[in-house]
Length: 255
Image (tube, rainbow, N blue to C red):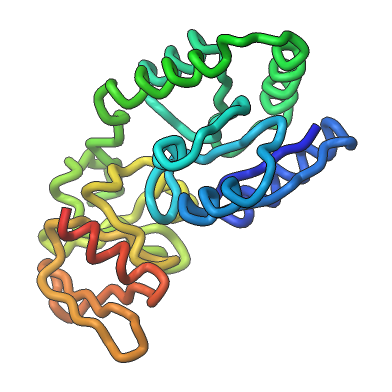
């Protein structure tokens, strides 16, 4: 079985590849791609695999954008956390999904499901994918977290998303409020938070920081291509956006 993995987190892609090899040693990973643009380019130049694994949120868009640019003729297993309506759509259309972090047993079940249906020549598979995309794209946006828990004066306080200025990793993960209060959270990684927040409101500026759109006071581009962002809650705090993500950042602000 030939597989293509579309995933913008290198460690997640590497782990998925390792688990697939453990489950089915004969699997051939044809390519590991990390963006919409690279995926479209690869598909235009190569024969499609037997199966795709696709993360939904990619660095330059969502994986559904790929379907709008090239014809996907093979089954897809999505790797993401999505709302209950999307999950229902996956099940109705016989397309599986995996929640991150990927569980080996669930991955094996998904591969077995693929093997079961792949053996049946189903001319309606194209219609199933068309129906899947329509179901997902016509639903409301995924349900992202609207409140976050943080430690405050010996207790735990729920904070509305609108009160979050940014998340920052400094040994542990802190939530900084719009009043510039720095509160301890129980999150383990910035990656974990990135999966939970609404990408229209929050931006992963770098490895240590996720910022809220309403907190961008000013920003400026440097000759190096990097972007320096100053925040409203504390003008002495700045978030540096890498050259690779600079255009994505500007587009995020301009939407």
